[in-house]
Length: 325
Ligand code: UT7
Image 1 (tube, rainbow, N blue to C red):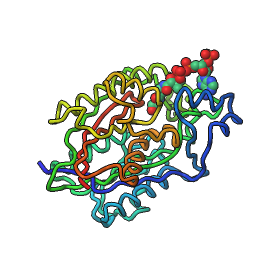
Image 2 (cartoon, helix red, strand yellow):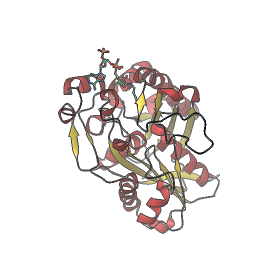
Image 3 (cartoon, rainbow, N blue to C red):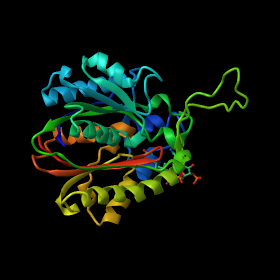
């Protein structure tokens, strides 16, 4: 099996900043409620740009960071819950924009865990020699599938994209990786597609394509599965939590992160947080955070970090990385 490592990261978020007080002019909410219940202060919202465009900009930043030619990419995966279209895939649209003409392209739907699922798939392709260079993107324009009259969801999410490039390497940077799903919890976080409507359909169940959520159930799922994911990747490697410099969690709610820190008996400071500035960008939260950490110089060669996520599906996953840039 080949060794795999991350050779570049990048991100992009729309320029338009929407603050909590901006939202209080749209729905019955307040900065006090949103800040104290979630930790979110502001988020980025597109003024028309779609998911493939954000994804391509994040990808071009990662390509620059990795110093590769887009033609070297042989697999391109976009993790998204908010694709531009049913077909073509967002990955194919990104391929055309960035000129990754030699890539096989497809999307992954694992909601907020999507980037970790994408890293897992990409890692297996490189390990087995099927691909050498893989671009994994987490990208979302959630603003187009939110119900802007539902204060219990529209204040939580934002738009953005992050990307990482995996490559075959001499030393191993993906030390252990884990994904899981629990379809029994599908009802707790959903956004239906279109209604089945054809000349033969009897029961027409009218669907509304907006996000709805049972926040309390998702909260419980998150605080249960994040420690499981962290333990799993530690057990599958030679490391303990003390060897880990940072945990990069899915950015949904500061209270979830505090619960997990308490459960694991570790400091909140071990978690990299940027949800105050972006809100929950689903599949994009973890790669945006990773890119910010790299650009801020927080990651040094040899550092061990854990990425850990959870989301609709329900899905969850984690990866233990040795930073080898
Ligand atoms: O990527 C995965 C995404 N999802 C998550 O991670 C969600 C996990 N869950 C959560 O983060 C939390 O459950 C929420 C932030 C969604 C909600 O927090 P909560 O403490 O569970 O609040 P709640 O749903 O119990 O609502 C408490 C009150 C309710 O009013 P009443 O019934 O007590 O009068 C809500 O109607 O807060 C009200 N409320 C709001 N008030 C002002 C709900 N949303 C808002 C709002 N502004 N935006």
